[in-house]
Length: 247
Ligand code: PEP
Image 1 (cartoon, protein in one colour):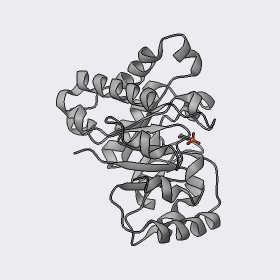
Image 2 (cartoon, helix red, strand yellow):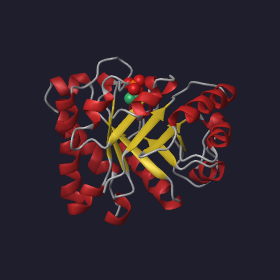
Image 3 (cartoon, helix red, strand yellow):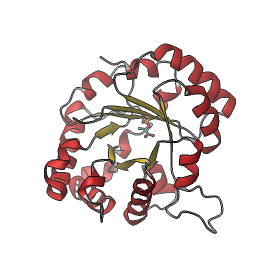
Image 4 (tube, helix red, strand yellow):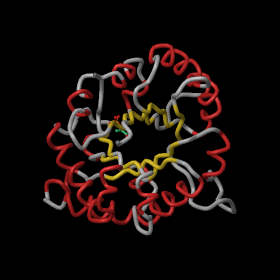
């Protein structure tokens, strides 16, 4: 019933040439897919990536977008531009954008709504810092991010949003949340979504992200409320194929 998704987030890595060569190798290794597999690449790699995966089911995503359709926003990219380039998914509100570029829940919400309007699949990120976890405010933080991110979104659209739970202390650190910690928070997110949308919450895919690799993917992905992964560092390596084929 829920989409199972393995999404790579390349962050600011790989040139267009490197993109073409990496994806050529990965697509040859991946073969037929039984889940959604996508790579969220830098803007300047999008055309090369779309070309490289042509004829396969691999999807190409972006890592951010602006919430306006056009206008005087120097350095920004609109949802329409992404769509035209062949992008089908977009990460919104990654913790790196929240912390380095001051993205707020309100801004995240505007972007998610805009992505839905044009038909892009938004991957909305949420997650707590280690300090917030240690102070015991973890669930409040996540609830605020989810309620804020979904504000004004009707149930019919809500089920098109993918949520990525990414504890900040686990991103790029090699410290993965335990299966139980990840499941507890993904189940909590589903509970908050249930309060907002009732049974529709069962149709929303929730991913775990934070140092996922080919060794821990299987046990994380087999937790009942984890419907896939958002994978940073490990999506830049040939072993990403094993993350995808974790079974
Ligand atoms: C990410 O950037 O979304 C991420 C989860 O990174 P990593 O897998 O490297 O921790």
